[in-house]
Image (cartoon, rainbow, N blue to C red; front, top):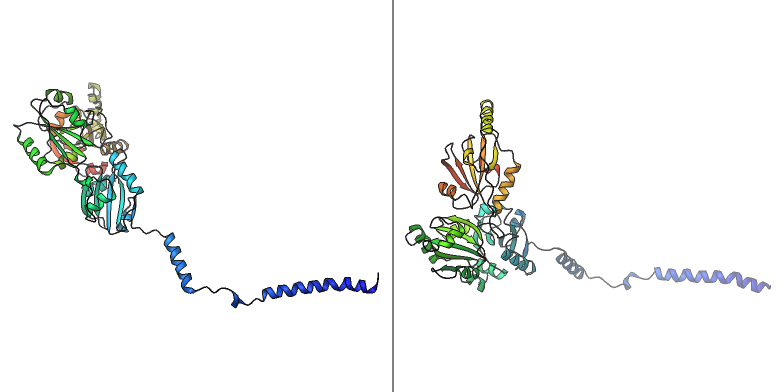
Length: 401
């Protein structure tokens, strides 16, 4: 191999490496001034847009109730008391989740069955009730019914009410011989039979009040003649005038009470139920002579432990304090209190007797009880001492004694 060829083979790689380094150096040394310039105003706009996409304001929402949601809500805050067993509540609930809520409105869904204290605070006596509050939770306005955002806005004065608010209420006087079942079937969602007598002064008062004020569009009241509706009285166990019976569209009895004078009284007495006939509760059997003897022996040494049992007249006066709890199987708040009492340790000297609101008519008459979830404190002879409605804890009962 010639010297020239050897020299060429040695120098050529060095030359090529040298060219590569020069090219890399040229790339690295490209002036920054040639890159596109980022304007500060454009960058700020991008940041604001990103913040807007990521942060959802508390206004214009429909969400589950919390005290914090009230405090941080928009201009108009409305609580929607609804129940899972209420068809109209479910329909509106679904509508609201799919609706666009206005910027100035916050709607909070409140479970009617479990929020008893909140119902007590605002005087809510029926599901599908709305309560407008301020950011401190103070009530501004309360109303029943509505099936859209527009209905709610109409009640707040934001926009004109829709035709649902103007639905004709039903207070119908059914003459003897008319088809009561057909009228009831054609009625609104909650249906009440009003056994009225022309010679009954309080019946006439209720009649005048209903004609003047009307009833909500979700309620139908049918006035029946107490003196001539013999079969219906027998069917529902009606034994006196001025009696109300709630029924479903198939004329099944759901609840019964006496003495309501206004539409608010009727609404307060409506059962918190899903429908169906009430099931009478078993009555506790009277203690045997042997048991009574044992109880007397125990009383000589220590006071009887407290108890929560079914009502029996022989148990009245056994303890220092006796409370009769008028319970209905279809009443959700009654069942909540019943569960709490069964799980609680009833204090010594207290006996709570559970009476069936639907079947213990004479007992209700004796104490003037006109609605379920009523509690009556009695003395050792069964005479009324104190009467009150509501309360969902053992403590709420002991505080009244």
